[in-house]
Length: 376
Ligand SMILES: NC(=O)c1ccc[n+]([C@@H]2O[C@H](COP(=O)([O-])OP(=O)(O)OC[C@H]3O[C@@H](n4cnc5c(N)ncnc54)[C@H](O)[C@@H]3O)[C@@H](O)[C@H]2O)c1
Ligand SMILES: O=C(O)[C@H](O)[C@H](O)COP(=O)(O)O
Image (cartoon, rainbow, N blue to C red; front, side, top):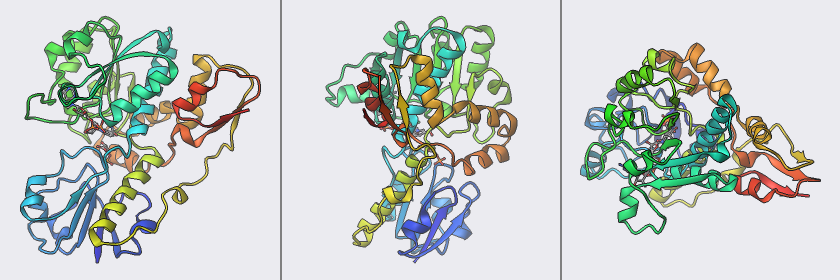
């Protein structure tokens, strides 16, 4: 069985090696001729899976995407050919939640004031939005959710309308899928009119899809609104973001908010489980055994920590400033953007760091935030 895999998917040899011949390819440039002889195709978000890519292949048994987003996959086409499909919902939710949380701590540190005193609107309360909400709740930050679809579906959490939240929030963090149809499409959800409604001194974070914000309108609005602070991980026109926009952004990264080692490994593992199900095989590999140990054996807190010290702790797990810096230096053209993503291996989740304490008394919130093993 020939298993064609995006080269940016970690642990594929360990997980799929026993199921067939693993062939690694560039997901961005994958073409129909290369796919023609595959039995299994495993992609990430940069591969458009559609008629054009698959028409020359008559034996494909399974397609998987190690991502939450599915806007790159023509699922109707796959269904029309009875090709089973799986994605990896939730695989990188913790990574995105922690990324947005750390970015907010960074902005607070940079511009004065505390994140703890901000009000955060989370637009899209699915996996990644909820992961961010969990971080904010653990740290005691006030937040509100906007998700008309979940509100209608009977989700018991309290939801608010977007326009209402724009009059309430200091921080707006976007966590919606990219959709062009349906009752609440998100393509250009933040157009110029909506961007103009951002509160004074607002922070706007986009960790979902670039096209949820009209990037040209954002350049215009930011050019006349110096008060706005921007964190963008996703861009219109990836892998070629508008260089002019990058200059206006406080923290800029090449679509790596979900790129913790744990998140990427979970994505691959979820596809492994799905393919095993499809083949009627019991999965034998163990996800936890794949991850390397963290370079810090643990950290012992000798007193309760303040926000600045919390940021220090977060930076010891993942220093977002490094990615921002490399991105500005090397990631602004398509090649640099993709290279940074391809070589991104350094990031872990809070759970990689074991905390202990001697004199600290308020520590429960750190384990709720995700750190491991808080105990005296
Ligand atoms: N930057 C990254 O690395 C990264 C990582 C993971 C996911 N993503 C992107 O983020 C998106 C969200 O991920 P997720 O795991 O939270 O997905 P999810 O499907 O779990 O949640 C998305 C939520 O958005 C809600 N929603 C849809 N339209 C809305 C609208 N108009 N207004 C408010 N809410 C709306 C849905 O009801 C759903 O609850 C993904 O589709 C993907 O495109 C990016
Ligand atoms: O939708 C997702 O899950 C994310 O956007 C994902 O992390 C994107 O990473 P890629 O698939 O492009 O490597």
